[in-house]
Amino acid sequence: MSDILELVRKRTSSRMPFDLERPVAEEQLAGILEAARWSPTAHNMQNFEIVVVDDRKVLEAIGSIERPISETFVRENYQQLSFSEEELLERKTGILATMFPPSWRNPDFRLDEIDDEEIASMQTPLPTSAVLLVVVYDPRRRAPASEGDFLGILSLGCVMENMWLAAESMGIGLQIVSSLSSGVEVKRILGIPDDLIIAFSCRLGYPASKPAEYLRVRRDVKDFTHHNRFGD
Ligand SMILES: Cc1cc2nc3c(=O)[nH]c(=O)nc-3n(C[C@H](O)[C@H](O)[C@H](O)COP(=O)(O)O)c2cc1C
Image 1: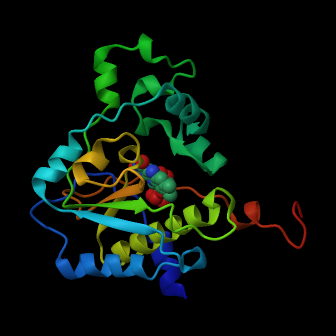
Image 2: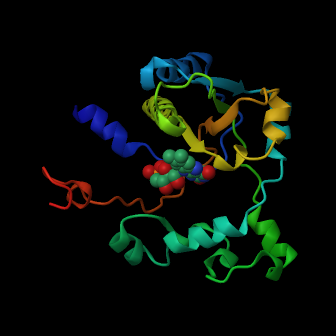
Image 3: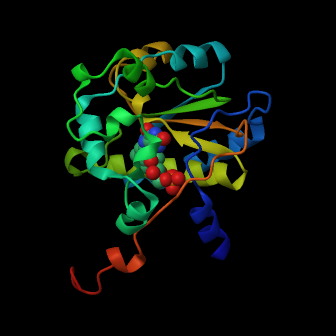
């Protein structure tokens, strides 16, 4: 129990470039995919496919896709930002503002009011990675009587966490890259059929340099636990 809890606490987002000289070994990748295989899914529908991308040219093609930032994203993101470590420790949710370009720290952010340099800084290239896993949702493998396939979508979260913990246990860094889920470019490059949906993509690898420490916060257990009745 203590080992699994330690692993759960240690798992973190690895947003740095990965070392291309140190690829993820085949057995390790197999272990991560095995963890995905044994994920719980609603009705055991196993509603996912995984595209393993380790071809440098394909990785570069995906890395060079423009990932435009929407005004809505920046506005909603602003609501979650903390502007100091003290504020983040107090709030216990969300992210530190310094992780984003300065223009995102403006509540009245408007895309048409920022200059080209700022736009360029918002569209940082995808950091290098040895492997990218693109997890594809197959809505046809739908859990019965689940409105909007809520249960199927939850299942994809189990796949994500299983893979993340497996990678963490091997000392391999992982970052979820949600921006690769929208648009048609990744689907086109990877030949993913139109009726399937990219659920999430994750970069995998060993950090190219010592990862920068960053403040990680969580609500306390008592903040989200209710005893016998909601609100108590
Ligand atoms: C569904 C989902 C989508 C996420 N998308 C991104 C993303 O696009 N980019 C990123 O750097 N992190 C992404 N994350 C990671 C979260 O930001 C991160 O888990 C959270 O801030 C807590 O930090 P930690 O992972 O270091 O504990 C995502 C996580 C989840 C579960």
